[in-house]
Image (cartoon, rainbow, N blue to C red; front, side, top):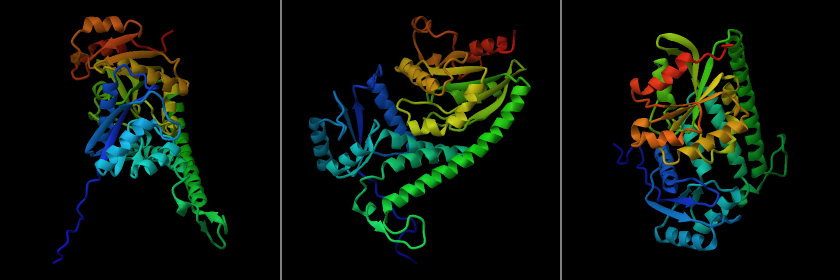
Amino acid sequence: MSQFPLTPTKIPVRTLIIGVDAPYNRVSNIESYFAEFRKLLETNGTEYQHELYVKIRTVDSSYFFTKGKLEEIANFCKEHEIEEVIISDALTSQQERNLEDMLQCSVFDRTYLILEIFEKSAHSAEGKLQVSIAMLKYQKTRLAGKGIFMEQQVGAIGVRGGFGETLKEKETRHIEATILKHKRDLERMHTARESQRKQRLSNRVPHACLIGYTNVGKSTILNALTKSDVLAENKLFATLDTTTRELYVNGIKKGLLSDTVGFIQQLPHNLIDAFKSTLSELSYADILLHVVDISSPNWQDQIIVVQKVLTELKVHDKPMLYIFNKADAIEDTVEVEGMLKKYQPHVLVSAKSKKGLEPLMNYLESWNPHKA
């Protein structure tokens, strides 16, 4: 019998996470932003041994961190023999490379962390293709400066590219070809969805779409209103694939209800681009149900994040109902109601119980988009 285990023991990487309070980040509560960063790491299953939280007044174009902070981080990495650093914010490819050289360890940013989570959370064929496109685009920006080996020439006879093509050029061409193939596959899926959508529109079936920040309770509300069992976990990006179910209110069919992928601050642009075909469903919705976690210290900032994405998708002028969820977690509902006056129309609910959802049910009961 072999003396060695069949599965090699995983040696944990010495990891440092760095939460950044940057001048462009105008969240009301920076501690809540850091908590969200830690929640991203938890969702990804990332373990870490050390934490640093730094405030920077300006962003250095080459290293992201200013000289003083950079030296402080470099000393910490050396002292604790750090092998991997994960940063709460997005980096340029140049900043990432320079930091790796300076800190002598692997460096990952917020964009890569979110992409990894999406990669693990995608279950449908369409979702996997969308995430793959976003990841490939990200990797393409990181090819430059990956060492001399990427610049070495590859000699080949009788293949496209020919003699003189570098490894970087070959890898770039491979990535571009894969992205193109994925886009063609997505287009076929999009065509099939368009056919289904045309049938629905011709039948004038009312359609509502749940939108909002990640982990605000959209899937829980979908399950409650449609008696479904869509995955609803207390983690970020539990839902990636658009799910559509029949909507019934007090036993009467009102139309269809769709759940969509949640948004987040600094959502990678490549992901928005990749998911545009799925999110195109919003363009045809009769109403957007904007779910907001009223218990979050940054709920107003989260509304702004969602509104920015809706503007980019050109659906910001759609009829909208604000659903302020998790009302059971707030102490002073009177004070909160005063803050909600500018968000009209709105309902204050708790998706935990049928009674807590009554304000939403009452609104939907009288909702009729086709009423003259």
